[in-house]
Image (cartoon, rainbow, N blue to C red):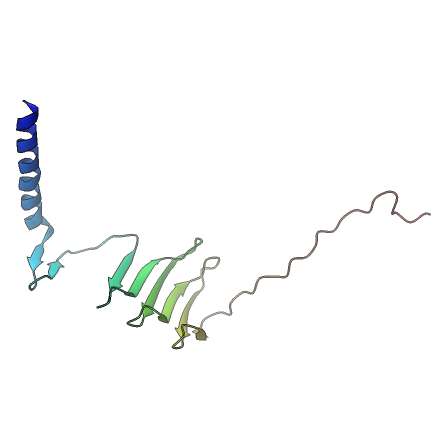
Length: 133
């Protein structure tokens, strides 16, 4: 097969496979520019729902820094309004509420563990600093 034939056949082959797979995925026209996917189950690592201005209004995914899952609900501008999930270092779940400036105003769940103050490590005194007996 020549290079010119490959440039003709392979794109047509990919187009045919794509058109055939489209029917298998359940893509349906839902309007002028909307599409709907019908499926029995959806498995993904992260889910984001965009608003009219393309700001993320609902985000579901893994907690940053490890931990379990978290669902965040945001206003039309993308500021946090409510969240529920686990913390990065705990299995305990909580529901959090935020004000208009996305500041935490309420929480249902166990108290947030505050980081302990850094304690200097105990050091062994040098022989010169040791008290004389």
